[in-house]
Length: 223
Image 1 (spheres, rainbow, N blue to C red):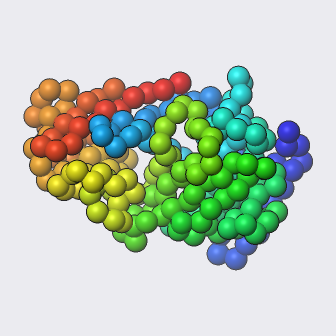
Image 2 (image 1 turned 90 degrees about the vertical axis):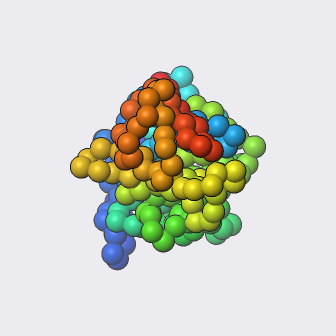
């Protein structure tokens, strides 16, 4: 288990903010929003700029939980502007290079934590600062989802690259973005939200169900 002194350690890097003890503002044990996209999968929507990643335990001590052999607080990721900075708290390798200090993450890098947990970090769109985390080892997220979206300004769901979530059978894109402090969806096609016609943009509401000509999704709140 990581010691408090280690968690409180700060390391300066040019052009980025210092890492602080992210457990001070941790949302461990919070209720998560999950976007279930029919025919595509489930994605945890992570709204905060600082996240702690660690082992799934009966008493959570991290924001993002993995069912695997790693510390209860294994690594932290901070978003500052369009950049993402990783702070390791246990043995960590980025692209098979061991690191024990903060590192800027780049698109399509593989992060190995502990002896067996492997994650892929991706930030596919130059038009959006939202990044995605996927488990590429045999482990699972808790709750069980296909990936985690580290939401920034917007997130693209659509049939083509560079969408954060590719939906091959869709004809057009669905955009999730912030409008006056509220997360909203925008799409070019007519959309039903909870059985009623919704004018685009329409707000993200926990428990909602939305469908269009070629897509459907729901927002679940999972504790």
